[in-house]
Length: 359
Image (cartoon, rainbow, N blue to C red):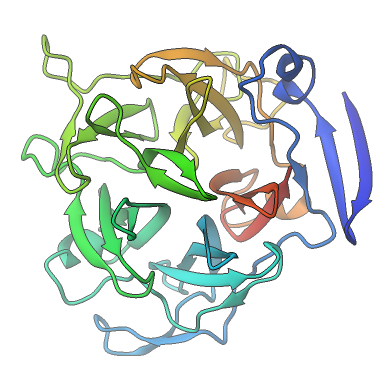
């Protein structure tokens, strides 16, 4: 294990060569390696008690991000990085905020949340836990599709919404609307996309859009139009197909969960994913229940077929702000953009703050 530290464009970075970042990546060209934590500026986003909002449910003025900011998605628009992030108020209710940056590092926040529980038909799914953990890609009509988790305090449901301007959203409700799944736990939707002129756009494979989801095993859903989604089931037993599992003895021994969108590349579909370490039969070099991130490759024409997977993590909690917070020992990746000839990976730290790594 070797650590190298250096300064680049005025920002201090440190890089820990571990797992898929060294010998493994040299043998497997599909791996997106070389991410470097921006030490001198991280965390790039903190909670702000000055952000206030008139909640349409409680009818009170609240400090909507005073407790935590975490788990952001990201996109490029007008040659700027737009970060859409989860924020929690003092009661733990989550809403989505937006911040904009010209360099990918320094952000100016929108004063109000852009997506939140409201007096609408989805209130029963979104209150009181709120709206969590967004993931965004563009659509071929010039708009955006955002997947998010609606949490009623008991059950998490994977939901989605559309927007043309990132400020006004049409909520579409749960991805899995069928009565068979509507009351089951689901979250973390990563849509298969391709890069077009620097933007990540939802793309069809064999005439269908595809989405990975789940926070135990990974499952899939597919759609003809991005509006109507069908759970990918085993025809024989009518259960959800499981396309990736936790692995005993590894960093992802407890669970696997999508990171950002799934990226269609020349090698296949690249999914950067989050893994949690189990209490036992785990990676003994990591704390129990810690979150680190790995990478997986699926077949480009059969998105349900796993063809490769890294043996170890490429990012793990090793900074104070990653190791101690609302939930300790967490690096949770969720936002990835290709910006100014670099890749910026945004992640939640200890469920409390937001940081970035660059390659």
